[in-house]
Length: 158
Image 1 (cartoon, rainbow, N blue to C red):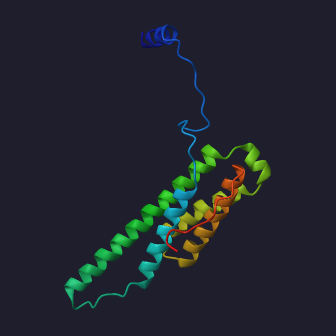
Image 2: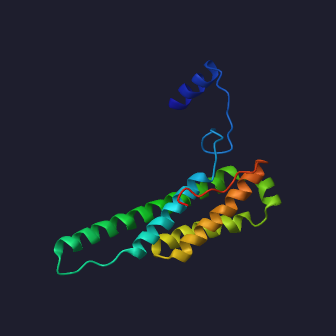
Image 3: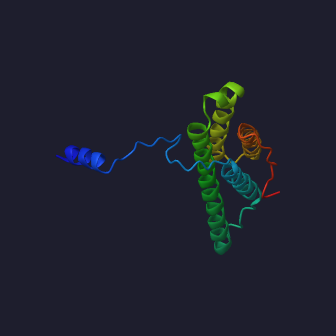
């Protein structure tokens, strides 16, 4: 019965099939969101590495230390996941076979970037955080080249 109702509505309303290259036909893609998230990962990694353990005899200092550390770790985790999600959206929704023909190492570069996102979640590694930034920069260059544009690579955090 529901199928008949849908078919009748389709015929009555003259619904046209729509096609989109992604989940939503917005057409708005930009690796900037992955860059910003990767920068946050690097920033939180640096902050974690710079923290001095609290004097265990000062319970208030210990609480502040653990609170701050937990916040830094949570942000690092969240932003690494955001970077990964944004990179996967570019990979699965934006990049098409012609892009792969022109940039045959694109799959490998994005795979490396998403693996670095995972490594940055699992570890506290300034090296991996820097590698993530560098790999996102490669994707930035390829992305804008596919659009025939030169867009400067600018880091928000310096």
